Image (cartoon, rainbow, N blue to C red; front, side):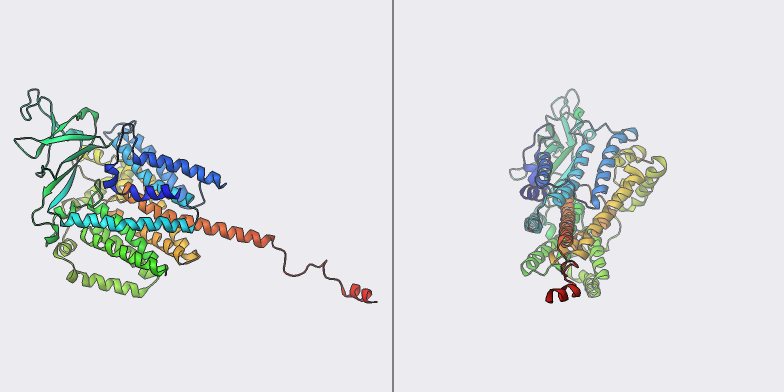
Length: 523
């Protein structure tokens, strides 16, 4: 099971890899097949060891309730939003729920199948081993003369030519228009896939290179299209001295999420390693962790994600307040010195005001709060905020706050489950930090607790919770803490049973002869 757990946790987050893997119809792809293998292996592994499938852990209940409630919200969403029932494996909302469930599922796998502390160390070593590759890809993209851009197209954004084919020369040919001019040459090809991974051949039209024709796409299928293309960047991002949205479009190995979500991934891993570094005194591991943290720190700085920066501040600030005032002073000093050390693109982003979407967030939050409490007590349905809000206001934007979106989509019940789940995850980590038997265990516990704090903060600026790339790593870290708590509890119980069964050290009353008996024996 350890091998399959490593494969899942280390491969599923890297979207550049999963995009390249073959995909078949009816939901047969690497993610789904591997998840099924893990489920079967989980059952067989625990049965072979004579254990229950679920080891006692505080997040178990809240994870199960959240998954159940969100699955129910998939279906009742059709009552309140212009969406279809999720009865197909290619349904966009069902795919999103399945991806979120896969990330949460990693908690159960790690918390219930890893055999001992050595297995947890091996999994952690492999997860850290990904950092150089992930940051190297981001670094190369950051310095490349072209930028890789992504676009997501809904079926209604695909235009059909007329019956004569006035635009494309082919009657009823489907095509779409991009805001940016893509590069079409031997080195830069456009990639268009749908949610099932089906690829479509494309070509630019002769009259406008921004208008692209799709071959073999049927708009009536309702399939959402993911478009990846290259654009000439000019001088390159590395020379940028001012913040620009071109810099925010660099996402490294994460081809299906934005740079803010990418930065949240970096922040989660960084905070976990901070906890490990504070508690674990192994020289080899400390060097390994510092190397990883330096790379992640570079990625965090140049991601230009203010939400991720605040997440790091929250995690390190909590650690400083609870454990080390000196650490807090050093961190505050770094914040004051940072503007003099950072390039112009970073400082301009840090000092910049709100962008257009941020300026309207209060309006989105107000709509979400009213929708999820007064108008729709159960919420408008899972992944239904955008279509319902667009139907009423004409604005197609997210809440940019996971908690408000959860309130709008799953009501007060869904919001309470998310908060209780994060609380249980934090308590799991902190319990191990306090009760851990050695520095490694305490480091895993502290790292998991700091990660939850940072994740809660970053979710205030958008969805950093439901993506499989973030969920696999986050819940694997928390699963490690839960597993070590279970191992320690089992060891304590076994020790107590041994002590109970051990005979008393003092001789019993029957074994010690009385003074009268000894006197009689001597006479």
